[in-house]
Length: 264
Length: 264
Image 1 (cartoon, chains in turn red, blue):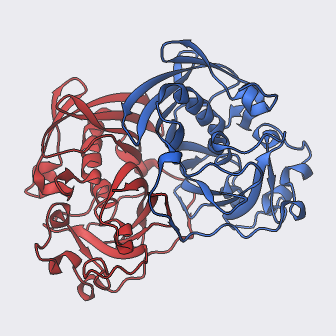
Image 2 (cartoon, helix red, strand yellow):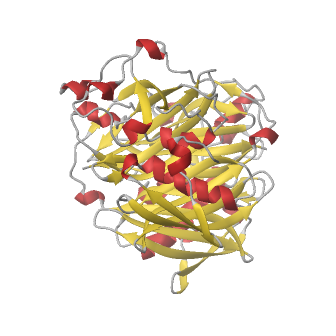
Image 3 (tube, chains in turn cyan, yellow):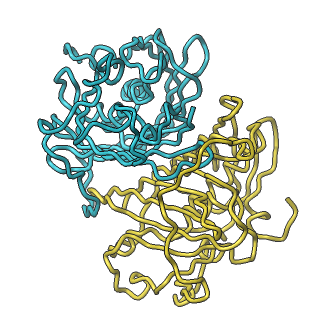
């Protein structure tokens, strides 16, 4: 991919040897202080697996975040686990300074060859048009930084945590797109499922660290805005899940994810 | 563990070498024809990882089902991926006849040392007492077999698929426990999250095959009946998710799972 878009320039990997890739993580993808955003790291693992797995579309991804990842070089080793006719599975290990930081297992499929039944009972978030929504980070003193400067979010109202008055409501809906105009595609979705601030910020919590994130990618999205729904329903002894749905502008569910995280 | 309970006798692994275990899978844990139930296979992987990972409680488990598993011997190799203070992660590969059949990555923690905040907005399924519910498999011509004979399910009404009149409703609530009286514990939960028939049976579908299953275990359950909620909201081109919640009899959410499956 040769484009000037940020994600195409920085979300790519370079093959260095058999089943081995290099990535360069800049501070432009930070989430929590100096730590890189988990969804971006997952996207780098998927970019490496894409080269090794003989089916085109990532279907289900599971990433375990083992250590914090900082800006700097990273290596990704891959393994083709099993190549079936409908589903093919690979595993990627991302390391920094010789220590493993993220482990991802992913199954790919070919959506173009899927031919089964469709019946959807879930519903798309009911959001005002993006132009009638607010960019929550635009009103912060520093403005958008890190992943927030790469991915634009529009919400119906300014969230409580921004103004220092958390609402206690751990469900959120929002629009999302790349700030630099890059079209939304299947490869964007691993980033988008983890690009919003955690819903627990509305409980007055400051930060949360992901142990594991599973994402299901279900269809190629239309290129523009996507509508998202985030929710946390079970905060127990500091551990919590966060669910995320992404719908494209034509009303198709394109991704669903759940993570298990720990309050910091 | 030396008990006469089926799961303790058959859900165990025997260490054969460093990071290598043997299991014997009988036809008593079948789900779909002759294939072994995925949750039981996950439980075997967890039993092996339990021996290698230096924290006591499985927290988040992700299993990829690579090939059908039949009754017979299986080998499980394990790897300790990272042992942190609050979270420790391992990986298990189950093989039959030298071919890998299930790959599981799992993080463990110590629930006794968890001390963070608790705030739960999800609600327990509203079910009549188990004695006022029906055992759906009791009315089938063959009676309960395979996993259905190991795990007892009680539902408010006889499900439509049993009587040949699927309702089209892909949400189900039910009670669950071990039929042989074994107390429900943390180790039961990987089996229970996959022990119900798929919700898509209420769409008139006959069977579904799991690609990946992620389970979050959240607390040690009380020993008896657990209340469960299953739902499928997104069947798209034959691919579907299935969500599952397990609540113990004291009203605590003890497990949450999601799988990505393919209609057969």
